[in-house]
Length: 244
Image 1 (tube, rainbow, N blue to C red):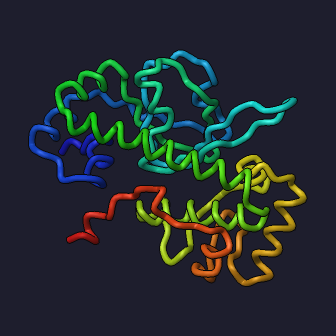
Image 2: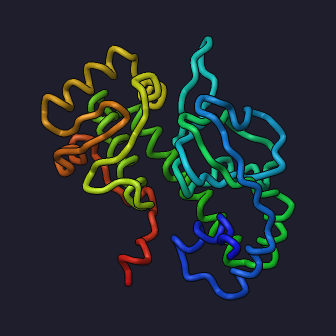
């Protein structure tokens, strides 16, 4: 039996696809590609002729900063479509690289645009995904600019745990999260010293533990309150199994 198209799984998390949408997606080419950890996927300014759907692993987007520094501006987990804006802009606006070993579905832009023209609801949902990415980006601006070190990390852990739980990769605040202190530093704009001290403070308060690539949140309410975390900006669709 032919496996389902990767984009079908993405769509099914949001809506109940119609027979026509299933058929249209089935005609869309999708090359599954493996990307080793710490390898680039796309460079800032690079011409883009394809989109990527994350099937496994974690990636990040970054922008060059002063000197040889890079600011992480987004994390991507399974089900995300990194650099989707390049579908219409034609060039990547960021560096994208794998943090862990990843599997990606490569979707050609020309075919995606044809799919959007034929299936307006799919076009609207892809546009929605772009708007959600912008919503998350605005929250990150607040996180890096106006929250204390411990609050910024608390907020980031709440966000990642919530996103992973929505796709079944976290449960009860526990999940695999192979981020180093360097990743956390680059994502929050904090120095490594501040990241280390803040993690110690979060552990001291009994809010979480992080080690060996595993995050465990022990006091969700306390961590969310400390970080000022409200999940609404993620605009996560309610899982269909929960709605049922």
